[in-house]
Image 1 (cartoon, rainbow, N blue to C red):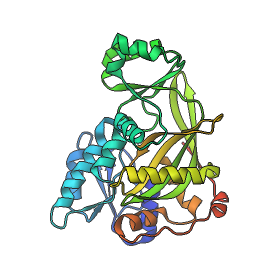
Image 2 (tube, rainbow, N blue to C red; image 1 turned 45 degrees about the vertical axis):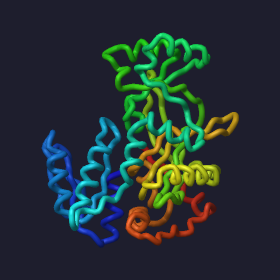
Image 3 (tube, one colour; image 1 turned 180 degrees about the vertical axis):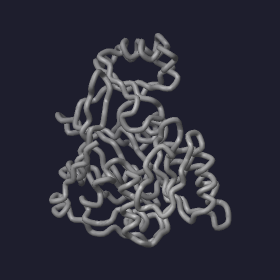
Image 4 (cartoon, rainbow, N blue to C red; image 1 turned 60 degrees about the vertical axis):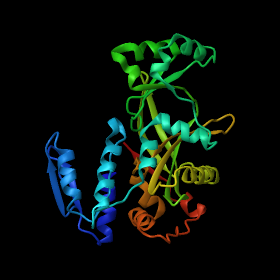
Length: 318
């Protein structure tokens, strides 16, 4: 994601680009300055760096509250005179994207189809556990409250197995339970500004499950174009639900094969894996589109027709 973004920004030839890079890793190309970060020093280096630049484009996982914490540093920097402009969403969207519980509550309140979540601590209560047993749901998944992507997600063949696993090492303090929903794993990418949404792509996710652990093996960008209109409707509902969503947003969904019902699982207020194939899929520079959306009060989306997009399905393999 970072390298794809750097390539797109470099092509624009409008900015001097500074990148923070783990000192143990090879420095990226397309960066005018690369700040080598020692282990455990990222927050210190990041705080210093944002005081020396004009804009900040943050790529970070929701895990352990990282995305939210770094975003809050950016919000504070923006308050300073001539402070760096944060190219990302507001606090409410970041918080909703970080917490699976808050995301479920917001989607439910907005009448957007989603799957119920149950706090691990509630599951440890016998009466609550028995009430879930009575729902006769055979398969369950355990998810970290603030995980990113497939990280930490486990599949269980029974609620009892899930409960026993959560009881170990007090996992119930950080995990939640959710019914397993069979279907086609998909996502869509969109731009948001002032409660409006513009769809960028409709993607099929290729998710593998090995020994109860999920892994994202790849994405077909625009592999779900037949759902464009329905995804666009959901995108508009989410933008109204999160009026401070700004710029690129990725949304994970499951399409149920028998009823064709679409369940929204997660809202990611950051670049997602699909961005890597976005340039080829759109035949346009996605970084330019995102910057225009964030910085231009009168942003208008170029007219990407569905027929032209069908010729540009892009495979991203991990």
